[in-house]
Length: 232
Image 1 (cartoon, rainbow, N blue to C red):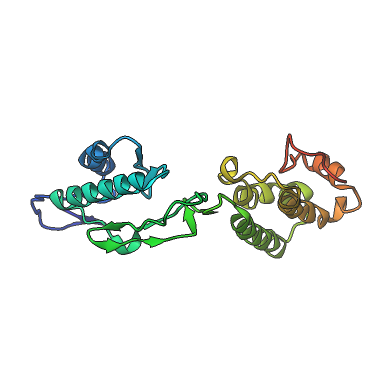
Image 2: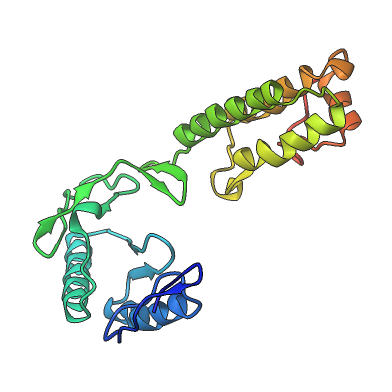
């Protein structure tokens, strides 16, 4: 039965599936797919969170064969439980460079998987070298655009108000999942810090202060707290 406002639909008995946005829906779905992790042999790790993933260390052709065998098991499981896997939306990424190891091809349900050299996982962009430069460039563009919109949309130039707007709407973009992609190169660290540096420099009452004093006045932390020395 479905309710829209004060109107109700006719009752229908469900023989399969889970009602979306129901309280028990997520729990019932997890119970339904929980045994999939038992399919895979040792060496292949399955993570059932958001976009489900398989991880496997490939050191020889036998490891590649083992991974393909696990994918075959997954394909059979999906057919048995009527949870079709979208092969065209599935892909694999080879991280690192094993010299001398032949390039393996994988498939699900006889559909070849595409190899990705770059992938967005939970809104974090990573490439096959475990570099996050493109992710940092992406969040910098979003953060600068959001910071510019604050100055366009807010009539007030109160330092306290602008600082709160920055920490509410801009810093989350720059800090999301930073424990994963936290940069180690000085150039990338400076690029991220420049967003807050430039924003605070535009605040009229404190624009004459150096960056460190502006942070103290606004009671803000550096984006690189605990890291390298802050340049003034």
